[in-house]
Length: 415
Image (cartoon, rainbow, N blue to C red; front, side, top):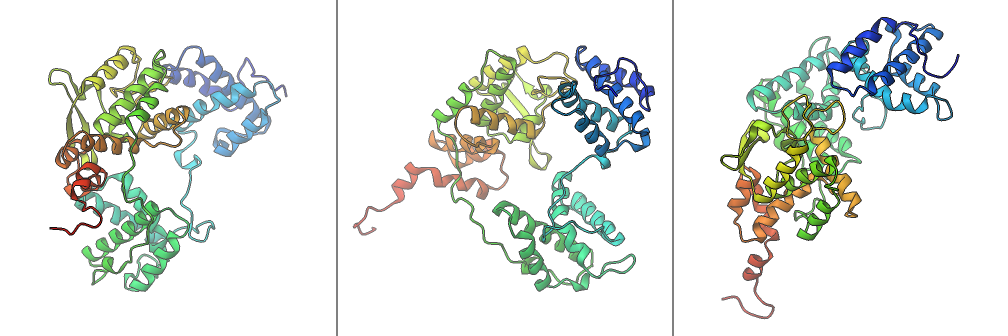
């Protein structure tokens, strides 16, 4: 067959071409992009027809084979590579390709091998644990999924009947052996998350009568090598980061506003992504974001933050599909995710020659800036939205001026 995009449709996807065109229009894709994606869809349909494939055979591997068919030396390679992700999204939303079919990363088993299928009773127990976390602890769905990732293999390894799990087989030795194996090869933060997940599982088992004694305290804490002091950026480094944003472009203006918001107000990446236009109150000079635990935080808008926000709002695309303050610059134009906010910081830091800088480091910078300019730990706590003052107290370690007053010069006897 010819490897250029056909002008007429044939094959199993012929009936969906018009639907694809309408879907792209409703999603706000650029008019120039529509014919390109339609051409890729016609090419895929013809390729499937040549290989005797129907819509029921449509899987991620089929799409990968089609993309491989248009290799680097084949006419149409670039257009297929660039536009196939849009087509993949359409297939998922139209149920021709399910989310379950989409390739996903799976947690690595302790021995590095593929995990066997879960027992029927395991799924039920994990679902009950998730519901308990949601109802009694107000744990977010994202945290629940993360905890499940670490604890699934433990639950599945317990003694099973056809529909039940024998929780009496849980012992401190078994739990610590599992934690030791599961933590192997992971960073300190992941080891802490693994232990937190298993302890939560044991608290649920005790609260629901599955075990008759609290095993959570018996789980040993893994040795970590966390840094003892938070790391922030200097004022000069922050300015270098902002200078890396070319504010003669729309994307540069947006990225500068994001960075200014993160380092001046100490927002988390997810909080910055969740900031809505309705959360900006220009009359009072404040903004409202939703923080951890779904708590609403109201913070003042400093002068420089206000200027950067105004500059961005003047060029923010008017055809955005939602009310998020920070949106994509390319179609479909919708709000950035927390990962998108983090990518902005990482890319700009790399361009500025600062190495790897995560968005959370700007949060540390904001707290350290409060302390360095004479602010108190209480003020830093209010800025960061910490409920527990003990969490904010870590920033006392970077207040060198105050710590210097507490030190006793060498050779002098303390009074």
